[in-house]
Amino acid sequence: PAAFRSLGTALVSSEKLHFRKVLFKYDSHKFQKRGYLTTANASSSFQNGENYDHICELASSSLRFGPGSTMEVGYDLASLKARRILLFVDPHVAKLPPFENVLCSIDQHVPKSYELDIYDQIRVEPDNESFQHANSYTTNQTTKHGHYDAIVALGGGSTIDTAKAANLYSCYPPNNFYDYVNPPLGKGLPVPGPLTPLIAIPTTAGTGSETTGVAIFDDTPTKSKTGIAHRRLKATLGIVDPDNIRSLTPSVAKYSGIDVLCHAMESYTAIPYNRRPSGKPPSPILRPAYQGSNPISDVWSIHALKECTEYLPRVVENLHSDEEARSKMCLAASSAGMGFGNAGVHLCHGMSYAVASQVKGDFWVDGYQRMDCGRDNEKDSGGKHGLVPHGLSVVINAPAVFRFTGTPMSVMNDAAMSPAEEYSMDRHVECATILANARMKRRGSTAANRVISEKAMREKPGEALSNELLELMNDLNIPIGIRSLGYNENDIEELAKGTLPQHRVTKLSPRQPVGLEELKILFTEALDN
Image (cartoon, rainbow, N blue to C red; front, side, top):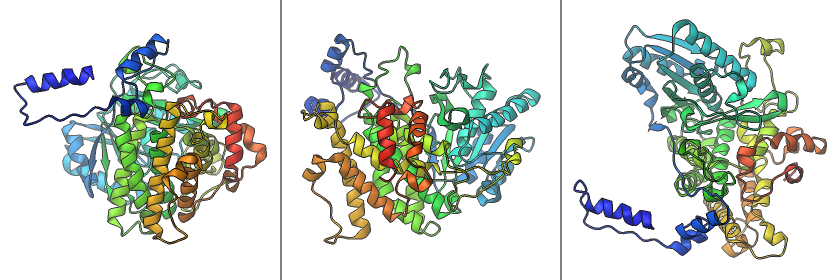
């Protein structure tokens, strides 16, 4: 309140701003009940030795949106005075119109003396070896010919994340690959300084990587998934062109789109930023990218959830001709990226990393193209590796997760809910209501298709949200339970151990603790959901 009074005084006294009326309503009781700290209880938390962080912030790439916007990338490179350009492209995308559009735009608008290197050895679901291969290529080219003036990434999250990592490692080569990798697998060193300008052009509507400072990869030695996270990793510009997803298969559209849904729900239900266990950082630059749910991210996350529940079924059913659905899902992906990129995700993603990295044999999903990336180690194995699409590995755990996070510990112990638990339950109910209303709109209002009352949802928020998510998964023909991916009871221990290193996201679960035993229970439930 004091800060708002100071801001109001400064604004009204400014000769540069003119107001007819300033209206502001502040309900401290509601603000506190929603789980956010007020000035008074922030002070008491510090007196109790709890160094909570009562500051949140938004970091995101600049965004350009619209059909045909890919053709403007040449203007951006010209404005950067880029002469040496590195283009990362998915090998499948390199055969499609978006790639030709990028090359055409560069040729039209960048001075003819430009040099363009193309790296197309992208692995679907990157691993530590594919990251290091891209890092070595970029570093070697930089050593031989000097730094690039700009980097362009054209493809899905795998391509954009690979470009982010290569950008970092070529600008500031570390002593060890794991120096920048998130703890506990790596040291989590901060990015030392500015990176080469990166323009990200997504060709899927899913990861939101064009907006975030995160690059994710499979760590094969530990059979887990981890990544690098820092605000400086984010793209300088994200170009979101709905025309670029026309060529997606229904499976890729479905599983990239369901990832958007989970980004939105997890970031919205994550532990509040001012209850984050790591507390207030000694410097703003050390504030984690994943801060916990906060008033800024909430706006983007809830918008993405509403758009995704309405337009994902449409884009899967009629991707090529439903221009509105394509546009809405592209924006939903970027919106969710701005939400989770600053709030974080929690157990659905934390568990997904083990499911995806411990894929059984050569499991594959129809609609995803098998390809040989050209690296020696993959040529030796025929260029084949198993794949659980990222979105599938996330959503297949989600029903079990939300039953867990939506059931407060106090209820299990026959005690009254704390304000923090009430805050979390409110959010589970809100998400369940959005999914239920979308289901009603999608299927029509019948006796068999109805929304349960808010009172019933509040009695079991976790069950309500889990059930609504299962309804959507059934409508989209998404497999139910990790048993359908080849896992069984004998895999539970390894899956749980593979999730334990994901401290960066598991600590954001609104229900704690989340240790080995809790994860084993969650994976057991996720077998069949």
